[in-house]
Image (cartoon, rainbow, N blue to C red; front, side, top):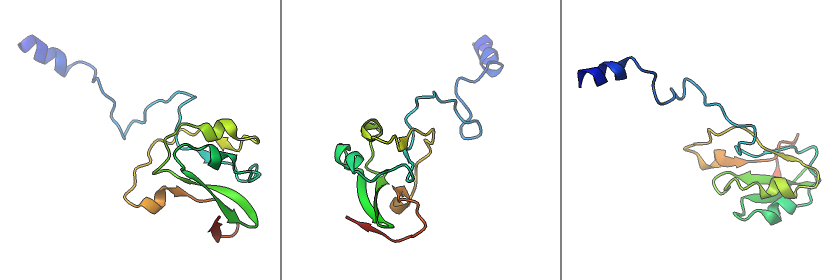
Length: 118
């Protein structure tokens, strides 16, 4: 038994030291979706295709733009596949925990702060 104790003490750890050491992720990792609001044409296909109803179209600066609720998102990326202008991208952001539910709503970034729900 002493042999196993000594071997365990001097062996490499089996787990990572998260959060001090960030994990290495694959290039096709499905993290938080990111929207390119400049490329978005406001067609609303992402909102219609979303099975979890996590994307809602809002009116910002006289243009319809998507607003994502991460609390509902199931990271299926149907929105990514359907977007005709490829305005939705994968990200490697996986640290999404929050105690404030309003922080999980990704609102469109425009010069104006007033966005109206359609």
